[in-house]
Length: 154
Image (cartoon, rainbow, N blue to C red; front, side, top):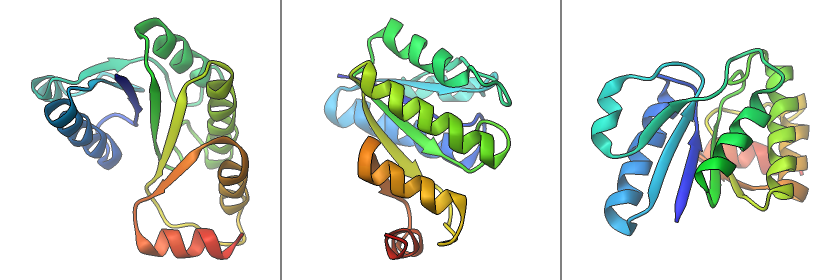
């Protein structure tokens, strides 16, 4: 199985993705890629996960570049390490992550979205998460506070 992690370069979610990728490689022999937005630290090459720079912030074509790369290398699943401003502004990120999830279904990728932040129940973010949960993807909530606030909005 081949898994593509999508994370912002040199962030906490990038570190999380690299460690998860390494564990999956060691425990289950999963081949992993970390798709990021900028040149990544070469130290992560030691984990056995391939780090590739595919997209740029504030670029509306970022989801399509990610999907093209994932399709080229034959990924079976996409794991988005979601941060509110991963693709640029929070609103742009909301739109682009929705597009990424929608087109992932078209290309028959399994998609998992790991939330790394706290949701405000009355925000656009919470409404978008509601759409994810109902239609597009599996959601992994990184903290119990996040889980409580997200599901209280449903």
